[in-house]
Length: 230
Figure 1: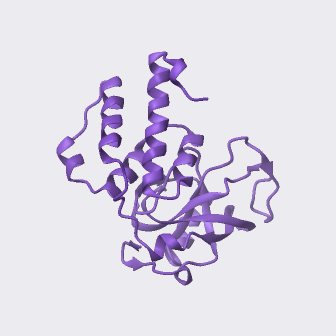
Figure 2: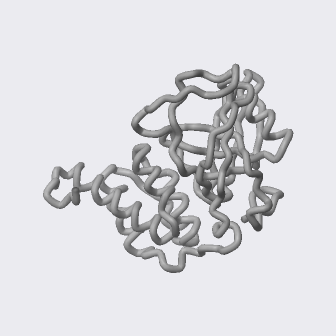
Figure 3: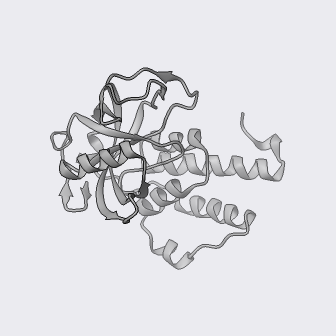
């Protein structure tokens, strides 16, 4: 996986401990691009440290049940939520200071990871020991098994139902990999649905999951509850 100027080819290229950025409803996927507006002091400190080190940050969602835990470290809040087990590692590939105390950054997704343990926080931000999905570095999923026609048909139905348009010329030129990743990341669904998309192991699984979620959402909007699979 290439992210900016760096290549990540094996598990050995990824550190065992990374800073994590818990953000509900945010979905970063391998190969995806995530812009972020950073303004909270502890996350400004996290970006400073990451830029001075390896530029890696683990995006992760807080658990949906809002369970809290006490964290080690004098700078940490005692009411931080538990984290979802699975997240996605990203590299800072663009960085801008705004002049009013904020950072505008872009993260490029590298690979998914599983949290092994949470360790003592630093400067208020959280850090975790992680185990990455090494196969996502060593093999490339080009999305050749994605049902592109069904995915685009479902996407068109969603747009029509919500009075929206798309640049279909650009869509037609996008690879299956780019298309699935972009549609999943920009999808307007909640934290649980975003986590389900992250946890899908292949581009085909991810596309199928997105199709199913969208069809359920469309059926609910139409009041066709009989066709929603419980």
